[in-house]
Image (cartoon, rainbow, N blue to C red; front, side, top):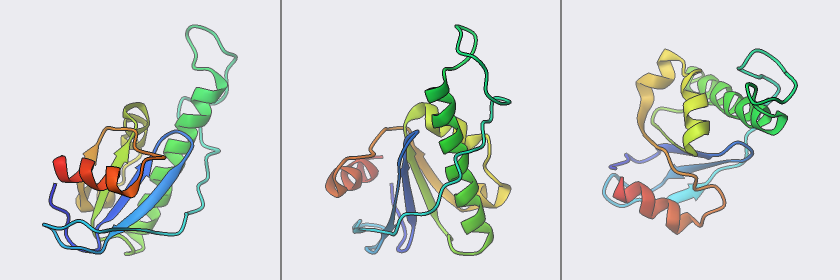
Amino acid sequence: MNLPQNTIIAVADGEKLSLFQNDGDAANLKLTALPSAEIDSSKISSGGRHSSSSANPDDSQQDEDGFGSGVTDMLNKQVLDGKIKGLVIVAAPRTLGEMRKGYHKSLSAVLIGELDKDLTGHSLQDIEKALAAA
């Protein structure tokens, strides 16, 4: 995946978000970690809390879905504020699916790509390798 300079890379799962910026160019990735953003994970997209049963996700799954929605809200706000001009989202498959539900049309317009892999907790080199191979 070719990522222009200053592209923001959001790496998320259901509990953690890491933000990076490409300080290299499209051919040579050089990711730099950015400060953590405040995430409001109180939103539960499945319509509120339910008791756990085979038909309802358990509380930890709802918390993870809420975190994914919170990450999307934060990214939408940063795009709308003009702070993000190019974005790549790397997320665990379920989290990515949850995040997609909340993409603002402006976020979709600056979205360069998505990678459905859980790379949270991986080294910067692992993330760069996965992006280069995508």
